[in-house]
Image (cartoon, rainbow, N blue to C red; front, side):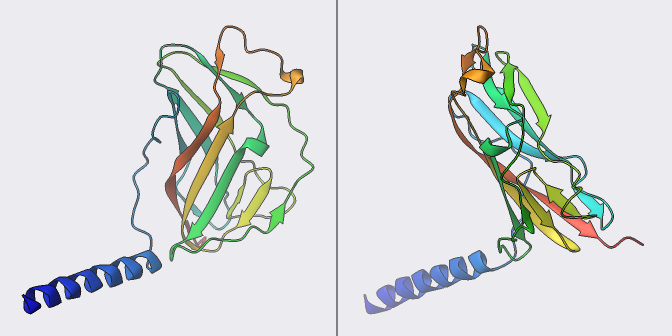
Length: 190
């Protein structure tokens, strides 16, 4: 009985140590998957090119899919309802180099028909904080050195200010989606 307990204890300790070491180690590869639906809406991040050189920048898009039977309205082009986190190959969060808080934007309703899809760009080419190998989502900018990184995100939408008006016959989608991560890579320009 004691040998069985010792073996079980040793197995539990080994599993715990493996879990701790795995969490502290390099990131495992991810597939470009859709999020779980939240009130019939799923989302994902897409990059135009997953590998760039040090003189390029990342073009990031948000894609949304409506699996329901009614048209859904979501806020588009509002940089304050979209968040991104960047991690390096070791799984450590990468700090931004610049933050913009006084953003002028023109949000509007994006209508996703039942069973339909909507995609739009959520990044820009930085003119005031990073040149080459950067990710700029309007409110935050990351300057990235050669290496591999992971981008994860969050999208939320809901009732907007009166200036946006009504979305017509579409139902306003309210909620928050945790977007599955995407992997990117930067290499030195030759």
